[in-house]
Length: 191
Image (cartoon, rainbow, N blue to C red; front, side, top):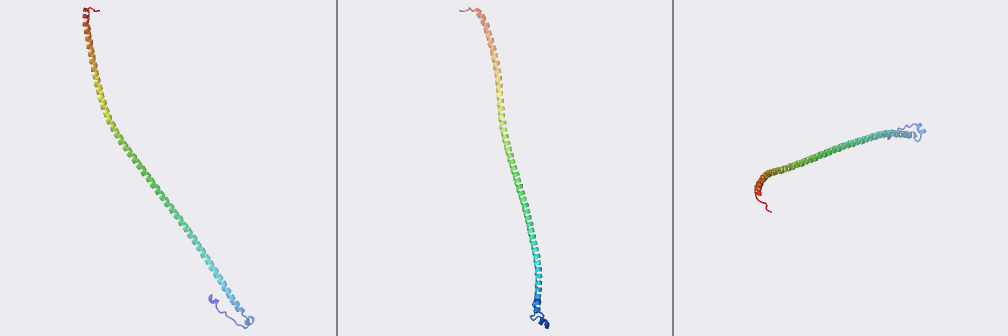
């Protein structure tokens, strides 16, 4: 193409041509026609290049859109992964919190059991003390009952002795009365 552009035009120097076209417009027309053909070829080439450039631009635009979509998909996967990680972290925290709550509850129950056991030991000690005091009270009661029984026996003995003494007194009085009666008969009354 470049060679055609700078090629020297072939001149037919006919006498007719020289006479009819003394300025060589035919050669000029051929050059202009050739340049027009070249320009037309260049336009077609540029149109093809433009179409190719448009096709490449569209392909690049499609690649860019694809890359954007892939980036969006990766972002969505990253967000999903982050959400799953957050969920796992939350589940782990919940599990840890639940485990801590269970441990605290177990400690509280253990403390309650320890307190209950301590209270049981204290109650048992108090019961032992109360039993010992009850034993002492029973012993004191037994002593008191024995003393009461002893006092009752003594009282009965005293009452029996008192009755015996009363009977003797009565007998003595009877005797005394019987003895006084004959004497009283024998003795005159003194005014």
